[in-house]
Length: 196
Picture 1 (cartoon, rainbow, N blue to C red):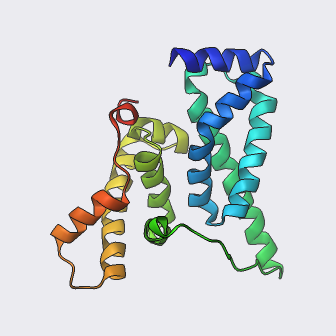
Picture 2 (cartoon, rainbow, N blue to C red):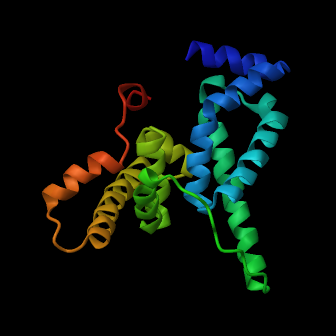
């Protein structure tokens, strides 16, 4: 945490190397959250690029360096929502988006298919909680929700994910199979992530 504060302070002072290091440390988090929203790696890359540019321009506005990651992810979420809104207008006026043709690594295909089948209001919370390791309180701050709402949606999201798994794998699966499979497809929260 102390190193993060120092890096942020250096970046705020105009140190480009410190800013690049901050972006490198958060690259995977940015990608996972962006793909959760737009479902397309190319669009996710564009959103990440816009987010990095905005972060570079506005890093001086960040008051508390310890909240850098939360600030950055919030900025990314806003960019993703703006992108989706713009795209919905384009589709409404006749521009048909190209069909996604990306090569996903096989081990991630089931997870991505399952997570995309979950309702969006639950999906973003599941990704922020399990993949990014944000605590429910911080997720609430990111998404402007009460902590209790986040916990409720997290519970419902888990249930939605379980149902999606059962649909995908067939009706013959029992709850024990789901519990074993959940450990494989949902990333384990590490002590470091869990302590945030």
